[in-house]
Length: 395
Image 1 (cartoon, rainbow, N blue to C red):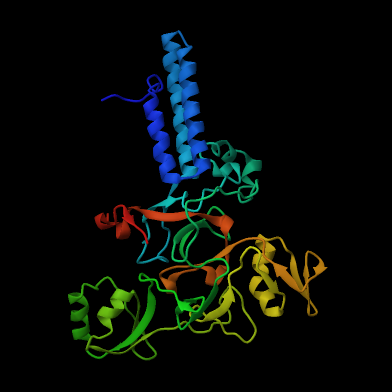
Image 2 (image 1 turned 90 degrees about the horizontal axis):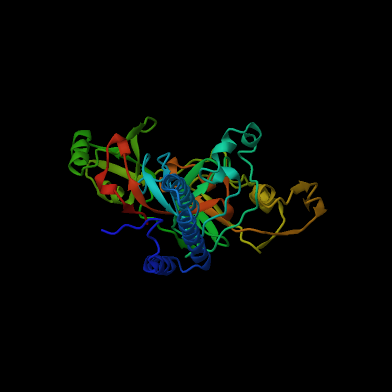
């Protein structure tokens, strides 16, 4: 079989096929330019090597330049095309499980340009050893820029992004509302622009009373639901568990139970929340309606909007929004309205009762989004290799 190397890459057909394939896949001018640059580097390396007459020096330089080219390709691929991440928690069960290793497609929404040297593979190594540079690890050194992608962010996409609290901490959640949508959560059900937003994999907490324990245990075993963790609500002798839609359908009609119902989150004044509005006892299962900020969206500055959007405006838009004696100030000037400069998204975990998401930390700015989850590379859930999840696509 003929191999392609720096010394025999003169065959132009390889380059032509290479270009056509990736242009067909991406359809993006910037990606075409990126590939041209890589191939140009490869061509220049090959030309340079032909000028070396000494065979030993030529072998050494070929090895060094091959390593350089390999590093360049790997670094570029990781920055602009795909990334690999490990799922840290159970917040996305049963879509993704802890220890799942996933592939993230950065071409979908367009890859971000690096915002600090720490974002560039291999280049970041010396910066980790520089004390002054390490002090700026959580800072953004350069402004946010993103290449165009093959598709826009859609409701229902499972997305990987940088945490709002620590940029080096990576999270995975499902987008339940995009910029400009009106979101309302009522009795645990998510409504987007007045319509129910269904997620087949979403898990909620349910409670029920067991009439016949032996019969119930046998039924759970026969239904292959022994993996479900049931716990006792001691106040009324109910059992509770987090269940998917499929599990609910298989359990709720068992003759050995009664009073099967969804367990709604109670109001807790001290719980951290997206916003705490006066006279509105929001919970994880009851909040809104409110509009997701969108670039160009103008809102009236009243007290409710101030509480709801002040973190977003102050932290991500540098608006310095303040309230004093019934008046509102943006960057020190009196204001009655505010127009958003960026797009934001509302993210939730599929495991609704075991997820810290936008209900807690607020609206996600577009600049924090890394890419869309393409598939599970492999899974070691419960310390056992899951063959049925190998290269499993994610919806």
